[in-house]
Length: 171
Image (cartoon, rainbow, N blue to C red; front, side, top):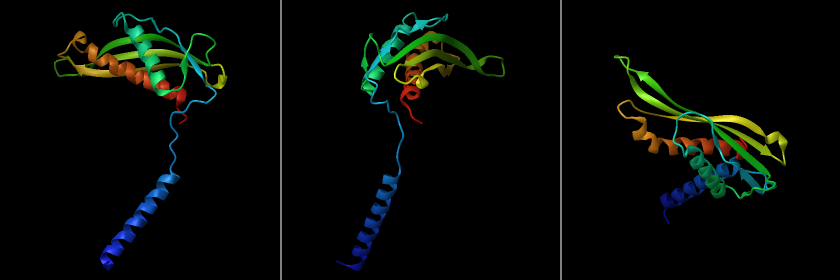
């Protein structure tokens, strides 16, 4: 073995050792639910706003249940749950954005707002009542009906992610 190969191997071992040490010092605090929590009830989301597809509350409700089933160990129940989520769609708004020189909107913005109440029967300090919202912009030369089917899943997915992070995140 030549000196160059030996020095190369020693250098690589040192670099790997330093990187390994740095990784072991770093800890990620992410989504974690208390192990005491076993069940969740997701009440039907109510629609209390004008506009939006008639099945929006049902679609959001099913997506929310699926998300918790995929990303937590909580079992969905209707009897004496540890966590209870209630939600109300309070806003479905289309607003013009980015005005152009001829006073037309360069973009339109679709905003979805949902009010969620969480009841944690095991730790009341974790209860909250909070509005979550998200928006997506789209070109003014497209109508809402043309883009609604692609925008709504993005809006609902982001709101559900934000809600989950609020419940499970220990940031």
